[in-house]
Image 1: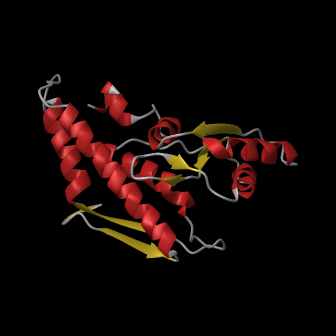
Image 2: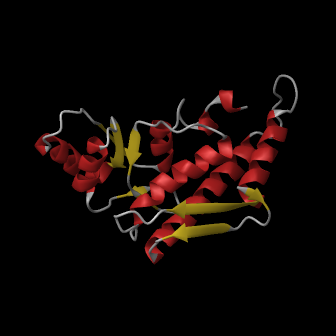
Length: 188
């Protein structure tokens, strides 16, 4: 995140669809920051900056900063839309300065309206999350049954909580420590 013109740079071994997913995630996250800014007008906080002044700083950070996202090549090709929800959560974490839970994996395509859409390969993704020690996995609601079946068939001993979501906001609530930051007064 650097102050500049609001551009996003994507590097790594990415497919075109993943680049589109990242752009959708950025557009959605910026839209939410814009809404948070508008909803804070006229409110006053305690000492220091007013809620509105703080939200203007958030808005400026989200809209006017260049963002560089690097996804290392690794051994798994990254060419699909499945990272959309993860990127949206990461950008929300960045813009609001909120921490993501380290025990939570996620997958899901997103729409510009913030709907989490179903993706393929959920069974493999859930088993991989379990194998590396994740205790929670966020999946599109329509992939919930596939995720639960994959865990039922798994030989791993580690319990994994499946968290089905319909919207990016629900994913953010599950993945960020303390829940969705723009629903929490503690952000300001």
